[in-house]
Length: 410
Ligand SMILES: [Zn+2]
Image (cartoon, rainbow, N blue to C red; front, side):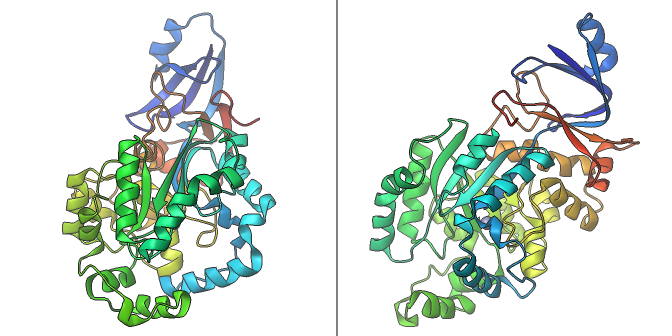
């Protein structure tokens, strides 16, 4: 049993405890947490470790694409989604990022160094699965399914078990879930979206979908217009006459397909309107915002205030290094803090911890609570009056793990 006393304990899901203490067992499970004055007498005789700074639960990066890590610095942004994706596809051919295991290993090591314990990894290639398992990260691997033609996407889904066997072999750890997931509602055929979502629900799994990410998605799904039909024609050789679109907004279409549900992570919602966010909230679908990726690609921010007004407290993700400077989910919270000064720092840190865990369906990470095994790290320094603001203002302050989940990284 170890007792860790810190200037501030940021619990993730509840209050911040000034001069707090956390008791953990050999597996990293939290046995007790609270004000040091209460905790220390209850565990008299145990040696006390002193952490100078703010103690946090391991972070949760609820949306990333580690397989693209080698594209860091290769894909220019700022011109909108379709130009970004065109650049990304071009760079991807040249760089073959999924084959660059060193870049993936570095990215996973970075996640660990930032204090991350759990991820939602969205992948085509499954290239990061073993690296995540080796580092002891937990969470979900979402295997993306693409295809706008029904027959070919259904064949692709039928082949997934073989692909999984070929690329991963025996699944390395029960701490990482696996679920085939639709990429978007305009790149994955509606019948496949419906099937993947209902399969995951029946099997008790989470799935993930990029939803209402940008204006081009809306103009295509609502009216068959905008840059996407041209992109289909050039990329997929699909003639304009063959296209069918639902005539609905992305969020309304997601609802029709059963994809607004508590087990479906709705990622981005950057282009969602207030009444659409209210529908997402009513359906209980977890939401993940990736603000720095949105800023990079489109110089746009996710609608944090409207989401909060609708009763949504989103999780946070970094997206990939093809559209972001780092995989630090606290930097996402900071990006929001800078632009939404009315949102309390405490809520933003909660989004990077407990809301991420909730989105991924995990209850034992993202919070310092009895029975959880969150991994504990300290942000060193003087946490001042508002420890959550301190953490966001000092992204470069040293971060040090003080307790690992059992089986975690070295
Ligand atoms: Zn993404």
